[in-house]
Amino acid sequence: MKVFFGTYFNKLDGKGRVSVPAPFRAVLQARGLATLAVHPAPFDACLIGAGFDRFESLGNQIVDSFMPTPGNEAAEYVMAELRELPLDGEGRIVLPDEFIAKANFKDQVGFEGQNSYFRMWEPSALEALRKAKLARLAAVTKRGEP
Image (cartoon, rainbow, N blue to C red; front, side, top):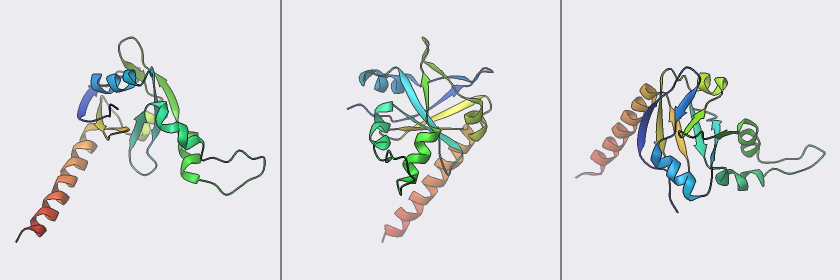
């Protein structure tokens, strides 16, 4: 199965439209999907996107009951925040204003593939995250050397 990988930066226009990277669109098309499922990350200033197929099992974790029941609060949170964003003829999606504000997008969006999903970051935040990860990896590698 095709997965989301790589890092791409695309322009965000004044109407909230951004082109989904062509390799990411190819993953969706290979799965027979024409829309994205996107939600804000609960703890980071980014958005999380994937095909709706990733969220089918998540919805099954929510108990359908008329009375409050203990359940999977993570699933409840994600399902409540999730939005279906159709791809237009040019491979763009329109991001809701509240999603743009949550991720602090200005005029560009950084897409970061993560296998079964991808994250959408403000480019300087993505670069800072990548540098921090690389520094942690370098520290671990150096500790492992004789």
